Length: 231
Length: 231
DNA sequence: GCTTGACTCGTACGTCGTACCATACGATGA
DNA sequence: TCATCGTATGGTACGACGTACGAGTCAAGC
Image 1 (cartoon, each protein chain N blue to C red):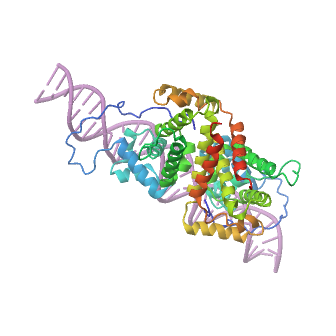
Image 2 (tube, chains in turn blue, cyan, red, orange):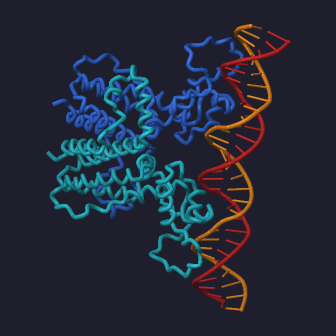
Image 3 (cartoon, rainbow over the protein chains, first blue to last red):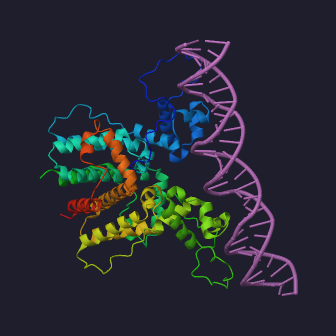
């Protein structure tokens, strides 16, 4: 992922704080804006999945011509990047956690991360293929700060962060990709049953069904945090 | 992922064991076959990445017309499924491990899995979006058998399997997506440095650079296996 | 009135996956 | 010997895609 996109900000003037908004009411739709494009892209992705997002459909929903989008946005990849990051903002715990309780802080942030991605299942499989946006970096920064102030030595910091990242990503991507209709899941298990002479053990344990994903996630996360705790 | 594809076997006659091969030497290319298509698709994916695989390019490489592929293969998704699974075959450890050492067996299989995916970086980000092919199921079956015979109770078996799966997938997907050129990685870190007032901690620890991925992978896996061991 | 810059969008090009259909060829049976 | 049939190949064409290009609109400032 690293640095797939330059910081080129399309053709618009470089970020200016809050412009005036003239009397453009007569127009049926509000004017295009990067924000509106991104919000609509997220809607579309939620409704139709990764392949469902096309520039034409996006423009349709916005009531604009296709090429108008390109004034606000570099290209389709840009839309993906923006939609992805917009969905991963972290607002912190509802009420502040007492400052010693680093474990709770980490738990809350990572569970919230997972929940955010599961609310938008396309995001999980998209994230590893895209650049790290500001909201993701903020989460990493926060994680880094918490662990650091909890006493994790600098030497072990990166290992700790990446272990947690890997765990959350793996669990979430897997969960999101299994989060298809019951029909699909049953079909898969039935296919498995048909092959049960080849895969007797996983067939018997009904691996593809009825898993307590949330519980398993918390359990594994606890295990990992135990191991990563400063000794 | 579950059951995205039916088992429809394209239009070819249902699997027949080893057919005769008439004197078709005069032809410049060997005849098309599912196997040749898949092998060439893997080559193409290795060389050009996920977006580099198109049916036209694939046909070009095979010296055939595009539509001829569709005799052997349902559609492009089918090609992805087959290429993915073909890359994930497990041949077991070089010499058999004594039967008690379940930890070593698990370690070997999972490290081999990770290595296989890193040899074909496209596979890591593809896997969570596709159905589980026979080679993946075999790995899960093997894992299941090892853990089961090591004394993991049926109740905890699924949790254990998914925890390991999640960990391997997360670590590998992340690693594969960071496995871009040094230039890219440096550009990313420089972008980060430019924003260092916003992300001071991860900037200081040079999170995006110089990580011992392999070591971290083994370490985290050890942690997880400790936690999952039968008590 | 004229210029300028912000913004919109119709047209068009090249590429994609693949439906449809014509064809070729070896094996089979009359 | 010849008609038939299953296997296999691939040319043409269609609709959808991302987006380059350039013409258009409109308000603000001179």
